[in-house]
Length: 290
Image (cartoon, rainbow, N blue to C red; front, side):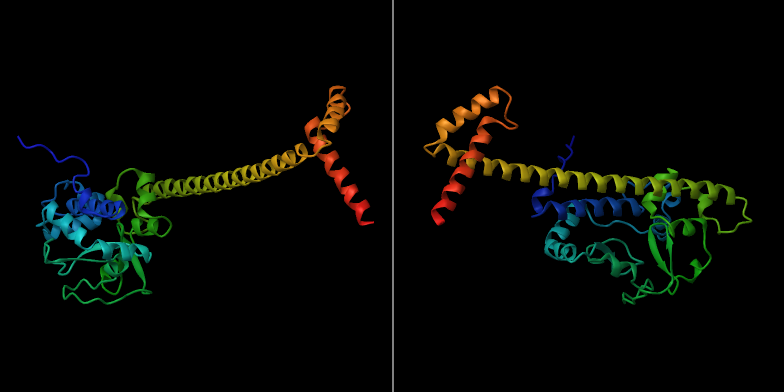
C-alpha cells in the first residue's frame, strides 16, 4: 500500500513560499474545474457558473501534479516579477477548446487572461473600458459575450459586492439567482432577501475595517509613547550620572532626602537633587560670564 506524500512535499522545489502557495492554489483550482479533476463535484455547475462551462466542454486535466509543480518552479522568476509589479499571475490555456496540457498552458497576468478573446485563435483583444457584466466570479465583456446583455439577479448583486462577500452572506449558491432580473419575477422576493443579507454583510465588513483601523492607530500611539518614555528615561539616567559626579551631590541629596521624608518636596529627593545641582551650575556659569 503506497503512502501519501507528506504535506508540503513539493516545497523544496521553490525558492519562495509565496510562489509555492500560488502553485498549490492553482493546482486545486484546476482540479475543481475539470471533468477528471480530483475534487470535481456534481454540484460544481450550480455552485460556480464558470465551472459549468468547463464541464460542458469536457475540459480535462492531462498534467500530473509533479509535472505541474515542475512547470511552475521553472517559471518562478516570471511569477515573482508579475507579483512584484502588482499583477496577479494566472494559468491560461492557449487554445480554450483544448485540455490542460503542458503544451497548451502558459502563465500570464490575470487581467490579460480576462480580456483575452475566447474565439480560439489565441489572439489577445483588449476590451478594457467596454461595458461588462460578471458571470460567477469572472468578468464577461459584452463585445465577446452578447448573450449576457440581459441582467440576472446575480449580475445586480455583483454590482454592489464581490463574489466572496455574496457567498459568505447566502451560504450556498441558489439557482434562482441565475433568473433574469425582473421585478415581476416570482423569485423577486427571494432576491430582496438575499440583497438584504449582502448589504448587511457589507455593513459588518465596513464596521470590522473601521475597528481594525482604530486598533492599528491605537497600537501606533502606544508604540510612539513607549519610544518617548524610553527616550525620557535615557535622558534621566544621563542627568543622574552627571549629578552623582558633582562634589556637592552628597550634601544636596542629604538635605533633599530629609525634606522628602517630611513631605516638603513635590518630587523625589533624587530628582530634586538633579534639579538643584543643574540650577547651581547654571547660576555659577552666569556669574563667571559676568
